[in-house]
Image (cartoon, rainbow, N blue to C red):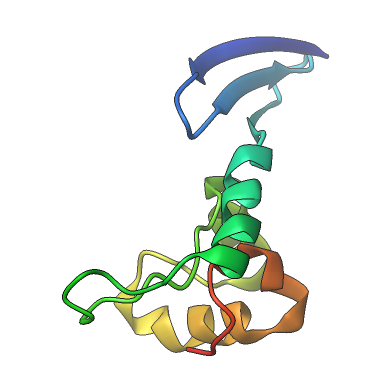
Length: 108
């Protein structure tokens, strides 16, 4: 199987897109992200940051790497970008298994 890099976003997102071909006409796309810097920011925010903006009317509750957004969609059927799925996204963010995505200690 051959693997080709299609695109690399070297910004804070850090996404790499690969194309895989098996030589028999089958193919797959792979998206890879190194979210360690984002998760470090989340840990720091949980400990030391006020999650509210200066007007106290908006609260940041999470930073979610794009690979996790894709994982939720493909494995759990939860579409982060669909407003009808907001309750499911909130439930995932309140689940202790996904605590490392949170930027504050409260619940949604």
